[in-house]
Amino acid sequence: MNINFTYLPGDGIGPEIGEAALKVLNAVATKFDHTLEIEEHHLGGIAIDVKGTPLPAETLASAQKTEAILLGAVGGPKWDHLEGVDRPELGGLLPLRKTLQLYANVRPAKPQSSLIEASPIKAAYLEDVDFVIMRELTGGIYFGDKGRDENGAYDECRYSEAEVERIAIRAFEMARTRKNKVTSVDKSNVLETSRLWREVVIRVHQDYQDVELEHTLVDAMAMHMLSRGKDFDVILTENMFGDILTDEAAMLCGSMGVIPSASLGNGRLGNGRLGMYEPIHGSAPDIAGQGKANPIAMILSATWMLRTSFGLEAEAIAMETAVTAALDARQTTADIGGTLSTLEVGEWVAAHIT
Ligand code: IPM
Ligand code: MG
Image 1 (cartoon, rainbow, N blue to C red):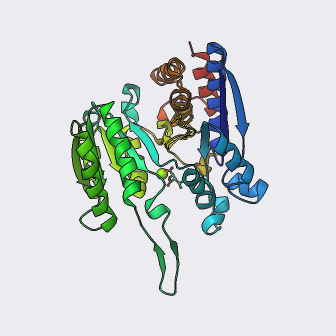
Image 2: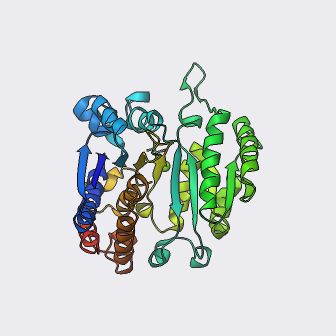
Image 3: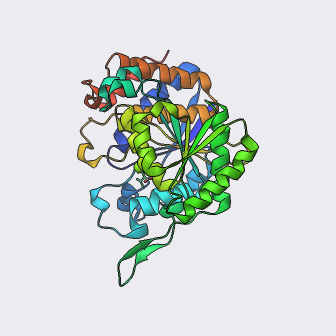
């Protein structure tokens, strides 16, 4: 088949990890007799430099007609002086997520046995950890009114019932395919949006009585995730809490450099498949251009793209198997104990697609 997707390498290490992931995708396409049709566009800082805007019209147009977007990372110190929607994140990544209505961001935490050593957490706490964080991605404080006044600055946090409802449905549906448990995370002892969040989650749960539901405050969750991570299955939370907790969860897995993500909506033309796939880490400007960046998160993001947007399960499994083999054989970058460069990891994984 034709695997047609929009490729947005972005800034910092984005292009390097992207090149490594494309090596692997090419190997998969050859092996399984597919054709890759890649539309590459600028997003973020590079788009500001080349096109004068973080989300150029042609980038958005390409993203709006494709079924899948593979994204590296955006942002960096070069653009830090910019304000508001002139910034790579606020003017590039966030409006892209919002315009495409990719409201459900899924980020996994399942430590691979070969990376137990790489985690700063004691091995005993990593045993049997296998959860996903379902992060609301297009609402909350990220998208509220923000600004400055004579006294200071403000960021408004708003959630509509409909926004909470649709992400809660996603979480319960996902739990049914996994261990049948949802842990909803909020700050309902303080925030009104969290009180609404909890009410709506309880209401949606009426239709999912077969799924266990528990509620946890976000501060306690930050602790439980480390002390008893194995108790969780689907962790459902709002945009900003999800941003913070997913970085924390990455450390259970040894490195930010190994965690992919999928941002999903209700699909397009009823196919339910439109998705944006990106590593959870940032653009890491401090190591950009040096071949040090770990491409595993990007390779696994491409894997999720094949599985979720294109329904290519055998291909996805072939990629995952090759990645696990690379980790087991320490054919990795230095952050997780190997000696290879970013591209060499991509080449190794590509050569082991069988
Ligand atoms: C992430 C990132 C982004 C976010 C930044 C780059 C805006 O941290 O995807 O987790 O906060 O959503
Ligand atoms: Mg983040």
